[in-house]
Each structure stands twice: as C-alpha cells, then as structure tokens.
Length: 429
Image 1 (cartoon, rainbow, N blue to C red):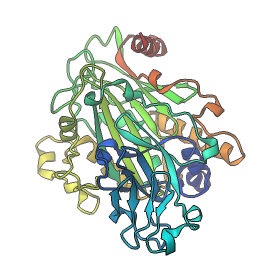
Image 2: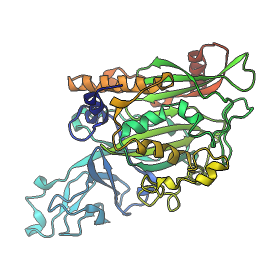
Image 3: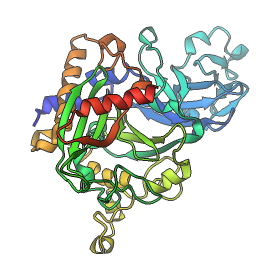
Image 4: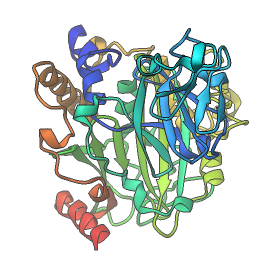
C-alpha cells in the first residue's frame, strides 16, 4: 500500500512533474514507421506526455515532429498540405520545415520576411529504428545518445508490432506487464498448461510447461531497472527441475518478456497523458518470428477489425469488452478474445488512475511492489535534482542489445541468475 502523494508521484506525467521529467530524459516512441512511410504523405497526429504533436515525412524522406497547432492562429496541422519539403497550414498557408522553421508566410507582406525567425514552431528531434519514430522531448542541451531498441537486432520483416490505446494511466498498464502471476489465470485459455519442455507458440495458443499458478518471485536489481524470476513447478520432471521465466523492467516504460520457441517479446507502455497509454507489444526474432498480420490477428488487434484507424478498441469498458458469457460456460476463461484485450479489461476497470492506497498486495505481487518502490524513489530523487533512472548519468551501462529475458528448466533450487546470464552470453556470441 502506498500513500496518495506517492501514487501521484508514480502516475502523473504531464508538465514539469518528477515522473514527466523522467520520461523526458529518454527517447520516446511516437508513430510507427509504417504510419509515415510515404514522403509527402498524410501527417500523423499523436500525443505524448499531454502534448499534441504532428509527425510527417517530407519530400526528401526526413522526419519532422512538431507542435500540432499552427504558430499563427492555432489551426491543426493535421489538415495541412505535406509538399515541397514542408507542412503547409490550410488556414493561411504558413509553411514549416521538419525543424519547425517557417518557410513561407503567404498571408504576410513579402511572404513574412523579417517575421519568420520569431514565428518558429516547437519541434522535436527524431530518430528511426525498429519500426518506430523516436522522439526526444527533453531539452536540446540534455539530449541523450540514441540506443536502438532490443528488437532492432532483427531484420525489419522479422519485427511485428501490436499498437493499442489503453484508457488508463501508464503505471497500471506497466504493472500488468511485470505481473507473472496473472497469466496463469487471466490468459489461461490462451496459455494452456501442456507436457512440453518450454514455452511454445502455435497460430492460436501458447502452450506452457506448468500448471503452477503461484510462482515464487526472485529479484536482481540492475543498472537499467531490475530483472526478476518467476519460478514454477513444471509438469514434467518436477522432482528434478524448476520452470523459470525471467522478465526485465527497463526503466521507465519498457518490459522484456520471456520468449517462446518462435519469437522474443517486449512491451512499451507509453504515457499519452495522465489517463491514457499507448500499448505496444513487439514480437521479434533474428531468423524465425511471426508476420505482422499473423501477430495482430493472434492478439486480436487488427486495424479495421478489432481497432479503428487510431488504434482504439472496438471492445471497451462501456460495452464490457463484448464479453461472451456463453463462451465462458463452454470453457473459455474470460469470454474476451485476445490477450491484450483481456489485460485492458482489467487495467481499465481499475479507473483512469488506480487508487493504490486501497491495494492489498500478496507475495506474488513482488515485482509490482518493487516497481512502485523503485519508481517512487526515482521520482523523489529527480525532484531533488538527481539524474533520471535508466540514464547514463544515473549509472546505466547495459545497452539495449544486451537485454535478454529467459525461460527454461533449471535444476531444482538451481541458480536462476546463472541460467539467465548464460542466455545473455549466448545471445551476444
């Protein structure tokens, strides 16, 4: 249980709040590259940390991220013409380049000569990697070196991304991602216990080698956040082995999830504002993997079927996620198709910002408790002038390319840290 003040420190990201400062000390994912693939294509509006932004690719293929609203009279640039290396507002024709510089002011004498420098629109630096446009929302003086995401190790055709809007605060979404215990109940129809030697993946299910719903949680603090092990009793050879799944929390918003036999997994839980989050689930592999279409179908996250063009769900809290009670009677545990929608039903049911002062945590909530302690402490430190968690200034040395999760059998009461570290060494070889 935490106090109301601590809950605010953890959750509030808009403006100059401590958690907002932490977020602005990291490169943040904006639109998917596929959304702005075409030079002079349709501008994409999006929102990060409570700011309304616009992203476009100009005639030369350069990416720009600007304040959505024209510097002149505040009309939305989402309606603008993307042409001749700039974005032109429809209202009076003011035109801005990818750096926010004013290129033209046709409504002003001499096309605004003498006024252009003062009329520059707010812009943000960008990078592109791993299927995303990344945005730096901190100060230009504090810009961090860009470290491509862990899935950038895979070729682009082996990276599949689910993108979904969650109508609740980022922290309760992230707490769901680091909660190993819930998968044995909430996702039990999608992840059925089976007599297998490790996590598998088929077109419709993820068979797992344990019936154990009460994992033992063990921690290891790291320079990037923490990793933890969920240790379960396996179905096969239970006398000799433990089944271990390690998950990495990469501060402040990334989780690297244990893989299956077909692909590796990561999630990003990115604050749109205080009460909305963009959920990204990435499946990737250097040689195997899953296609984009298959991944979105498996997750129940197909645009035009499960989601609208803004990645908002057809299944919502207002319609009870179209829960099928007849399917539940016939064996489906939740009556809600798709692992992400099952999660979101739980997250959003907690309210826009969960009231953690009323929580009653159990032993299996160890990772959630660790996340809260770590991030509240980090917010307090930033408020006192310390560097943000997960940055080089705060002591992070591990590059994203070395972030490797693990799942597998370990000898009974064996060293889970050694098994996980061996997986890192194999990945680096």
